[in-house]
Length: 384
Image (tube, rainbow, N blue to C red):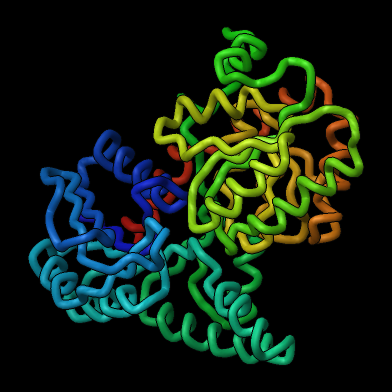
């Protein structure tokens, strides 16, 4: 069986979708007899890897000047690749124009078409529309988005969704054949590593030993609520006068704003995007608390990585990330910078070693890529 994954939500620098695709590809090649075909945007259309794990890049412009994401616009080439490779399974990782083309191709050729709902795209529409049209437009945007998604998914085999929260949202829109499939984590990388002393890891990373270290990992962009996080750092400083250090690991279109903020705020520093997952795991092990400001997440893979390393987390309640929380009680109810800051300060003051054990055990018991992909391959094989 040849399984094709295509998406334009793909950055060479990382992100949840890239982590999912890389882990899936490795599972298929190592644990199954199947072939894997990955089609993602690039600066030009070309095949870059072959064998049982082919990778094609399809030409597309950058989304913006600073982004590492690209629009997948060379649709004639995409269609040619699908005809040439002729996969039995096609999974679209976003709901946009390439997904519509892939669905139509699959239906003509008798292949099975699936979607993975990685990104709650109506939120992106809402953030733009509400700036100009006001809150009255919310229902209109959701209705349009729901109609579009329902039409796209109705002629496919199913829609994989990482959280039950989004299952309920999509079910309310009338989207059928929803398949709950939580993402996983690489336990060989993201684990507590009890064989090493945390203080030694801190020394290696140049972190202070005498104060809490609060960590953010992710893209710097409006959809990741970077501005909210910067406001939260200021309010944490007001609520918690004792010494602490905030660390922001990442890159993105708001990097300049983050750098400027860090220049004027000695309590917060920025670390560029880390390409090596094992290096990132050490930052998780060294820190005291993960701070996640996202209000638009569909899953929150970074939560699993951090908690898998024994790092407790604080984020906002009431969304798709709730299911990935080892300690939901400590999360913020109020979805604002003040609410997040208050929850962070409260958690800092009550941290203990059992929090780290609870976080790591929660991930170990409930989440792994093997669980994710063994279930998914079974769905492919059964056609549901």
